[in-house]
Image (cartoon, rainbow, N blue to C red):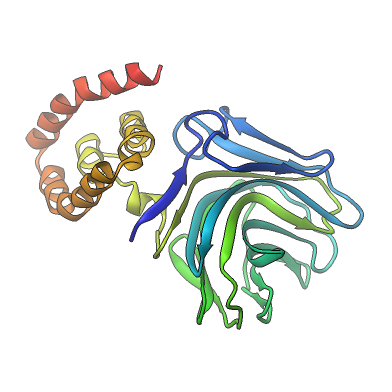
Amino acid sequence: MTITFQDGFETKDFSKWDRVSVSAGAVVEIDLGTPLAGKASAKCTIPGLATGVQNAGVSKNVAGLTLLHARCRVRVDLLSLIAEHERVNPIVFLKAGGVQCSAVIEMINGIPVWTIRSATGTTIHATFGPTIDKTYTVEMKYEVGSPIELWIDGTSVLTQVHTSTDPITAASFGIAIATNVQNPARVTIDECALGDAYIGPPSVISGCWIATAAYGTPFAWQLNVLRHFRDSFMSLTEIGRKAIRTYYKTSPPIANAIRRHDSLRLLVRTFLKPIVAFLRKREN
């Protein structure tokens, strides 16, 4: 699996993206107050309309891909769907001339549920949807000749057969599209990634296993510093990406050994302390 693009908004801007798309009255802004991970997330807000399409999201162009995975963390901060088939799309794949497929939250029988919609497939609905203020990892796959698939928190929840042969030209995140949403809505996104195979939740690809074992929690601030260095510097070069892949292959058994021995945990924390301090100073 190769990650071809990723952004956790730790630069506190949208410089890695090709477009920030907002309809009338909509806003896409950096959220430093309640980020989903690290120091920053992106908050996407629409005002609501009686009918029509709204959007508040970010987009990344891709080079005509016939296979693409997109993953992001999503927190629904505000959503009050009223009418049947009102919907917001946290992830959208675009093709030349329109939308190829979308991961959707749609009002079905009075309940907002996860949905796959596409240009050539029958719309498929799950029996459940998101809870307000809870964070989910949402991932969608498109592949010519293979079903579109939707994962929520690492579990495959929907697949949709389609007949399209069109390549993907861009991926959009946030409230990429909202259709006939009458009330204001707000979605926060973070840890967006594109790849050529299943990516999985951030805890899987971003686990920093050795540091997590040393600090005893995946939520230690020191891990955010290390992840920022990995995502903002190491992942930008082929040598860095090879080092990251090697780490993911070799570190789990080392982390297991560290986790079992307090003396090893202390040793690793002592070793990491000046490194984290140096990297944190560079961030600031």
